[in-house]
Length: 452
Figure 1 (spheres, rainbow, N blue to C red):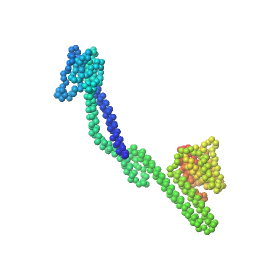
Figure 2: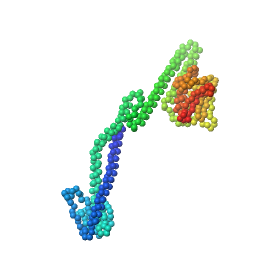
Figure 3: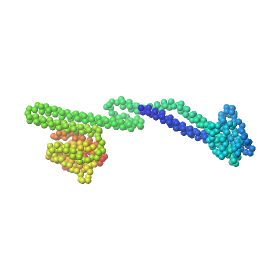
Figure 4: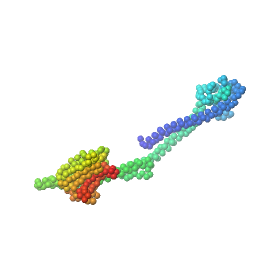
């Protein structure tokens, strides 16, 4: 069901309910006002009759002159059929009555207003005994006369509302359509856009209720555009980086096939194996980078235990370290100190530590050592590699960037992966020399400013 139909349905249901409640209270209020007016008249009439009573009047069973007939010129618009007066003596004898055929009930000790049945109908009767107890005056009126007046007043208010109800519904329909016009314009604009059109939707002239929605949509468009830019850049970089290794592998395979001697063939196969390892590492790194940048990540709420992470990362880097005769070492904090307390994903942090160790082992001088140090506030990986220049440090983390003069197989993605995983965990990566005199290389992870 559309929003417009839903609003109209709610209005059509709620309006009669509100009218019904208002009608009920109007009837109750009108009944109170009518009762107040007629009760006052009955009290006044009984007091006036009481004031005329005295010795010799009224006589026994006296009857007032007959009331004018309804419709007679002398009656005007009066209707006295439902009004009666009676007077009783102290002995309960009827002394005065203004109506024949209407007998107000005699109540010896009555005083004030009483609702009593008269000729099968409910009358409201006011009893006023005299001060000396000789007379009891009663002035009564049919209750239905009052109800007739109340309902008559109410109908005069309800009928005009019922007559204008179709007009009101038409006006409400127009008002709802006019109020929802900005949403229809927004729908038409978005439906007419191209899939690549991620321009923000103007919100300056939008209603206040739509501005939060437009703000959220524009934020979503911005995030989608950033994601597409990253994907396009990643695809372009990947295509550029894969083209060269594939061409080299093709050329090396041709050399293997056309090798003239076993020695030449062995050398060509070694180069082909090296190229395949480089391709394997490149694809693995690209998949890792794609995963951490895709935004589809596991819940980052598990408490991290660094011992299995460091053990797994060192185990993964051990073959490379043995080949290059690199000694791997790890320093833990003092007993009783929790190593770098953190909530996150252990698999991603294993990838992070493995990349740091892999880079340190790959670019350390053969026969040297790589140290992983972890304490309560940071994690650092150090080696004795050649110091990095300020220009190289500034470019570290760029995709597929590798400093010149590198002989080991690499893809230039390791630092990018480390930085992205660190950001996801509230960490920052700092690269610099290992010692104060500028020797060696240190990669240190510490909490960023927001989590420090």
